[in-house]
Length: 480
Ligand code: UDX
Ligand code: UDX
Ligand code: ADP
Image (cartoon, rainbow, N blue to C red):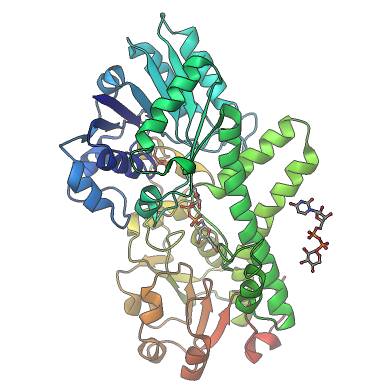
């Protein structure tokens, strides 16, 4: 029986291993983590992450060929294949701070593997890491090898949160990078055999190590770039009276461009896009390619611009001040169908509104008050450290309240900001909400989820990203 151990029971490691266990009943999969609370949650009825379909998969395999454990060393020792799926935060200090990846957790996992292994291992890089990380890890392992043969593979994960299970069941491609030596090829084949249990052969791509690592960074950079492109055009739509939905639809109909990932928004979030682009930028700079670095940097600049543009729009529409006004925020997660808030645009928007002394009342169906308070208090990039290593719990932000009900959150509010595209926001009783708000009642839709005409007919002054402006908003001072 092939034994797999995955180090890191997070958003990537957990779902990916659960699906491997489901699809490969003859393989034993153990997911290990240093966080006791996380492992306890994986072993309970309340999994640590919200992901549609995940509960079902875990229930089918847990205790059969899928296990969650904190006994990291034992399971690494026993495994044939070790996936490493630990945090790779952005460095906050020292060389490359604010850009380079902090490989502390990766390195400590590699050293631990070297310490406890007594048999040959295939070590698979699953976290997105900078190009050439595999080489560095290989050095740590081989310099401490005690005669053990280590094969390093790069097998980046392309699942998106909210659709992780569907993405894993039916991936566009599986990418496996390895050394082009006989042993390297054998290791690639061993991993290929696992995925081939359910993924068609022609979707399993094999490349060299560096191509696999770079493909992941490039794919995320391309996806983020599409969003920044459509968001940049959304600003021009508002200035000229074009409608971003019509423009994006027309552009996406070109089969060379394609219709996906062209939804204008208040900005992209999530644990990957910004981090991976910053990494790409850093690698380009280190390789003497400042023009290329600047090109990709612009994708992040437009994303930051889109978030501050939204805040400016809110403030300027409301007579240039939100001081003391209640603003209801609907949606805090970085996208729908997840409770994940890492790099969510809601953090920057809320901080912007708080900077103008607004009182914010937040509702998200999957995000807890604790999480929101932590997010609004942490410094940039601090979120990506295991919870027990994060700075001590800071004092709660007083002007922020969190409620478990959209009607409660919007009661008495001067304005509503929709920051996540949860389906339920389309179905709310906006007449009832309007009746309970201060007048004029403003609604700022950062995700283009509401029916503009309907809400305007109710009486709301509505702003939606990239849509022709209400006469009211046109009369307000230009947005910087
Ligand atoms: C373009 C648009 O494709 C077309 O829809 C519009 O109506 C007019 O402008 P055209 O300039 O005729 O058409 O050719 P196109 O095939 O788009 O190529 C433009 C340039 O891009 C060429 O120099 C081509 O060699 C180059 N190119 C294209 C690349 O370098 N790489 C590619 O992958 C594709
Ligand atoms: C992304 C990649 O899609 C995935 O392949 C990779 O493995 C990890 O990073 P994820 O961050 O989970 O996945 O979600 P994704 O669906 O890509 O959305 C990222 C952000 O972009 C979200 O904030 C989302 O709301 C935003 N987005 C997405 C838009 O603003 N407009 C779009 O058209 C699509
Ligand atoms: P991702 O979204 O990439 O899955 P997460 O932050 O959700 O990232 O998960 C990474 C997990 O890795 C965390 O649960 C963290 O506790 C765990 N981790 C980090 N370093 C180690 C280590 N050396 N050994 C075991 N687990 C680790």
